[in-house]
Structure formats: structure tokens, C-alpha cells
Image (tube, one colour):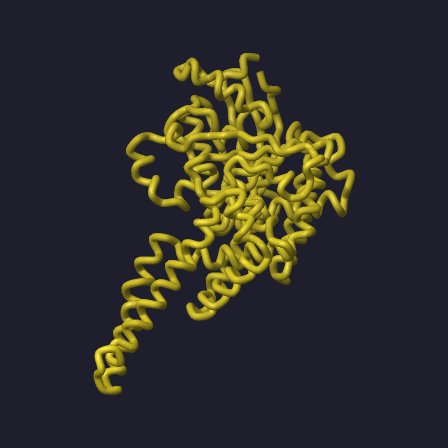
Length: 392
């Protein structure tokens, strides 16, 4: 049985989504609300205070023989997402392709296909899709030349090409999140090489917030991260360890990455600092490093050993936890989302429909220590109708 927790501090790094602090608070509280019904416990979440986002918010959960108070800090990077998204269309395409060229030149493409070929396809997909659209648009523009028509016909053909790209391709590409992925790869290159001044400011501010969170007395300090947030969390936690080596001393710290894409940045050659920080986290005596993987999620490095692949084969390796999204959702809900790769990837931080071996709300607000909670959840499947109890 896992050790029980009465007070927990959570620092969560969301993935690359255009969501501000209020939206993340709403998602988190909804997830806890759904999970509390599924697992038969009560949950009371504090309201969002736009004037006090630095101190986080409280979530108190109670069961028949347990109660745990959780202080939640969400370190979203929406300011960076907005900066990348609020630019002219031409610049977004140009910078996206430039980032792709940098990923290839910095060894990322080779590393992706070597260690997680599906992630390699995920990288290639949006750029090939846009390149195909450009080729079709160009073909439409020069169609009169191919047909041997007079130069005046270029007027309608160029207009036709523009209409195709803006009115046909762009709406079609939204279902595959194409422009969003272009921006994601820009940030990945910046995180790996630490080349963006705005990113550097965000990292410094986030490290200060993490330090303040760690000063709050608690039984457990849980640092969770999703997708791109895992790379950002690695940089921030690594900065804390570098600047304040004793900040974690004597504390129970668990670092959990969900659908981790740390290697998206760490495999790039300029990511020396990031790789060094991965090693520091893995070797930190007070940190338990865990990764949650799912086979049907293409946007992570399934079964990879992030610490070893970052050059630290001799360091303690992150523990791997495997889940199945399909086993957590109703058939109707899974059928609805299974072809949307970003939506499947997001399920790590959303509520489940069925009791299973993983639940994000229980991980972050439940009574059990994070590094032993999975044991309880697995045993609970043997008696799915049983009341959620610590057995105390």
C-alpha cells in the first residue's frame, strides 16, 4: 500500500496549447470533479483569482478515511504560444520551415527516427502537408503556361491559386493543427538551444515560482508536465538545482512526465545545457523521476530511456509507467478521439470514464504518494465497485 499524503504541493507544466491561466484552472478543476465522481470521493477546488495567479489555488479532497490538501501551481507558457501565434501568416510559415531545417541540421530528424519512428513521422507530417499545398498552388498559378494560353490568363490563375490556399487548404489544415505544429517546432528549437530572450525570461520567472512553491511545507512535492511542458519543466527544475543545490534537500519530490517529449529538444545538438540538466535531475537524491507512456500516443518517445539517451547511461534511469487510453475511456468517447493525434496526446491530463491504472486527478490531488499510487489503482481494479479508501 502506498504511503498516504495529507499536504501536497503540485507544480504543473501544461503542454503546447493556447490556453491562459484561467483556462488551465478550469480544465484542472473539471478533471478533478469528474474523477471524484468516478472514484467516490469529494473535491473542493478554490476559485481562480486573476490578481493572485502566483500563489496557485487550493484543491481539498476527502474520502471515508482520508483528507488531503493540495496547493496547485500551473506554470503555463501561454505568453510564448501567443507570441508565436500572433504573427502574419507568411512569417509563421517561413519561421516554421526554418525551424524544420534547423531540426534536421542539428541531428533531430535522425534521432527521432532512430528512437521513435512514429515521432519522426509526426515531425515530418505538417511540413510535407504544407509543401504539397504550396506545390498545388504553384501548379494552379502556372496552369495557363502549361496550357499554352496568353499571359493575361495568369491573372485568374494566380487568383485561383490564392483562393485554393486560403479558402481550401488552410481550413482543411486546421483539422491537423498544422500552423500550431509549425509554432511548436519553433519553440522546440528555442528550448533546445536556449536562443529566445522571451523564453529565457519565462524560464527565470518559472524557476522563481518553483522555488516559492518548494518553500511551502508539504508531505510531497509533485512536479508534473505534459508534452512540451516536460522540456520546459526539465529546464526549470534543472535551473533550480543549479542555483539552489539544497532546495530539494530532505523533501519528497516526484517528477512525472506525461506523454513526455523531452527528447524532442534534448536530441538536438545545441541542447547541451538541457542534457546536463536531465542528468542532474536523474542524479538528485531527493527526486523520483517517472515517465508515463502510451503506445497509441504518437507524440512521444514510447519506451525510450530519456536519461540514457541524453548521455547519462550511468545515472539512475526514469521509471516507466505504461497506460492504455482506450482502457480509460468509454467506447463512444475513444471512437470520437482516436483519429485526432493531438486529442489522444492530451488525454493524459483529462478525466477518464473508467477506473484504470492511471488517473491524472488522483495523481495530483489524491491521498497516495505519486511514486506508489499505481499499485493502489491496479489493485482497485479487482474490486471496481469498492469505495475509494486508504485502508487506514
